[in-house]
Length: 317
Image (tube, rainbow, N blue to C red; front, top):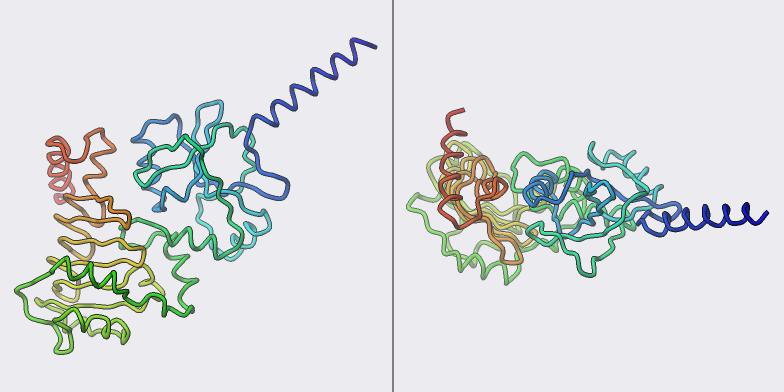
């Protein structure tokens, strides 16, 4: 009998240790998982995070015994997850996981570096929390990833009065000091900073046929596919952004540089926190950041040369 009790005690302790050692979600909850990578190589982390198009500071990352890193958006109620999934608000790569086997918790900083000390826990309490995470995207792609499309479709019927240009944003515009030798596309296109806020409030569509070999300031109403941006001032060719220009985004970021529909050529994308991606861009993709994933640190001759080679190769296709 003593042997039986000992055996039961050992099994119970082993089970308890296993349960306590991982970070599994409580009953009725799960982690909203985005995917995983093998190992902790920085270039792999950078590539994965860039692929999600989401703000890395909104993620919880977990390491398992097999050294896989799982990227999540935090805890979510299982019924809430099922609800937003039925509404078509999740992406095909998302799933709900118990977190079994998750051992070490990390956060990420704005540069996707792992934060080991005192990692935060994130909880998605309702649909608005979820959509706010999607709206925190720092992806620069014009093609609207599903993340942005989902968030934008939900915000299209909301009051956007809080998206008006703030004094702080106007000051940023003034500091940019954008100038173009091209004539204004439209008579009503404002030339002075003080008129831009009025244009933003008016909104309205502009006939693309009038936007050719000229410059324009376009203010957005913060709805639908334009929910991520506030203002563009720059050059147009054949109804498309082409040449030099500046765009102010609702998340506080600014892109100042060359365009061919979207970021294309030499430019600087400044995040709200002051971090920057600079150098060459191709169809919305930062080649500086791409070359960083190959091990060439930004600001070095190697990274600059890598950007030039990649831009030339992409342009041939």
